[in-house]
Image (cartoon, rainbow, N blue to C red):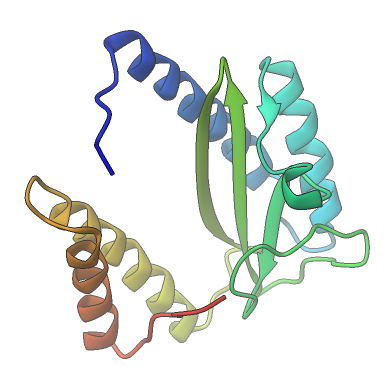
Length: 168
């Protein structure tokens, strides 16, 4: 598969999509508190995406019903928001958002502690995953394959007592 270089205008559109995702995640993460449901986060995200003139990337993709993926605690990825999923102090919630703007996608996720109450193990998990992200970014360079990036992440994660989910 050939690599297609993007023009400055295309890169700008990609950046704008990414900035919208960042704004949505910032607004939604501020709502993470005990008693909030993952559907509360969903409604806020949908409003913000519309307000910013973008379209949700996930909703309708293979019949996915929502604009966010919200995963609580041990859920790996792609949790579906629900009125029945209330957040509790001590939980962590991963919020994944994607948008389309002018034909270009932005997509990012963040993990947020509920009420800032974390066990030492969860604190370490969040610290290790953030550092693993930066290890992956450092391994992203000309001449390296995707496998090199994955290996850098996996080696760091495993050296810190955690494991990488291989299938989901």
